[in-house]
Image 1 (spheres, helix red, strand yellow):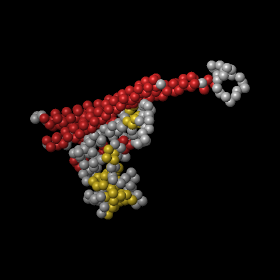
Image 2 (cartoon, helix red, strand yellow):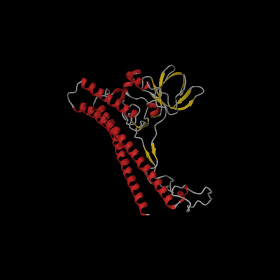
Image 3 (cartoon, helix red, strand yellow):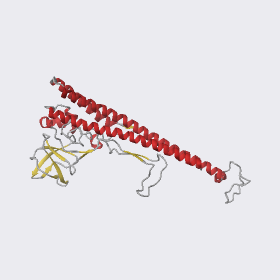
Length: 342
């Protein structure tokens, strides 16, 4: 061991042994520590890339499941549109299958996780409030499927109507841009401003709403927090340290950080509900019960074609993400080889 009378000079000398802490300042020892540090860092890069691959693979499996369910829905529609001897029973069976498949998609998106992290989203700007033709006939029954989630659809009672100024029992949960729907689900207007002190809001137009009517209010943007009644919103997954990094002088971004953009593939994002479908029909509630002629069938085929395209794009994104992982692994290998040369 070293002499107890240590000097401020930490350079190893003849009194030091190999076990002395002073050796940590030796060039050889310092190099060993640096190599050990580099190995740990490189191991962390590889570990993070493996974790990213796991997220990609798991997400792709969920997307393929949703794709298969959409294809099954499409098959049910084409089956009844091409046959010349379809009975009412056949229509009802096809409609039942579609409703089950759409509900299954909703459950998959709601529960898709990897190590407790959500992998899929259902966040989208709505095209309208309720517009499904069956809501007019079903009334309360048609809207009930959404009212069960009080955050997604809020029921209010009108206290007073003064042209475009509407007074309700309370404005809790209402925001500017929300859609106001009459009880039969057919008429709606958009809220332009809110007076929370007096429980009033101003509509862009008055769709014959009267005092005493019950109205339903839906937000302008549907999110996972509203749809699945979650505590916080789902967010993209950020993974740091997936390879040698540097800072760009142009945009000050780090090249060893990867942001996994959660696929927006819920039933609302796919355009399969009355909020977002091009036709205004709601397949989650009604299935194919709105079919009356070939025009409706063509509209349904178009809605599901669009949904299938969205899923196809997201599956292709997973392939692109996987290619990025491969490039990062090659980058790490090159980094190691260059260090060996020095």
